[in-house]
Amino acid sequence: MDMSRLLKPESIRVVTHSTSKKRLFRTLAEVAHAAYGIDEDVALDSLQERESLGSTGVGHGVALPHARIECVTEVLGVFIKLEKPCDYASVDKAPVDLVFALFAPREAGVDHLKALAYVSRTLRDSAVCAKLRANNDPVTLHALLSSVAGVKAA
Image 1 (cartoon, one colour):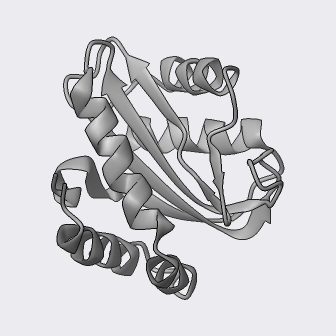
Image 2 (image 1 turned 180 degrees about the vertical axis):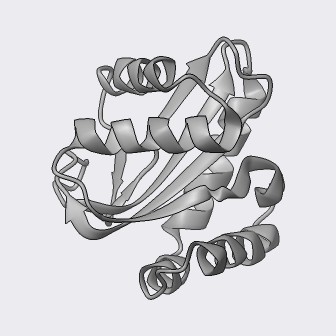
């Protein structure tokens, strides 16, 4: 698994603040549209549909929302760093500030799961999260994710 296949530099944003999980999902959908051409409403609905099954807030300020979408042909990622953490109903009840969303084909199967595990391993590393939290430049964030994640390749 290669981060450069999941995440384009233009799919990374630093957001000053998001008032709610719904607003955060709208921002993820907007970025997915700008970076990959995914329909915003389809992306938003798909993220919310998955979230209704249970929170994708995995703890320690990290969320991994994901959705399967008909028009997507490969697993694609969007990364958002929030300058002000947002309430997310995470497993540890902590607000999130690092959000890595995945959009996968409806029939992605094992590729979707591999990508989710790959991103999860990367963001479970407290040193990686500290570096991400210390930077606000999207280009730097992409370089950090690409370099550290390459070492953790599945």
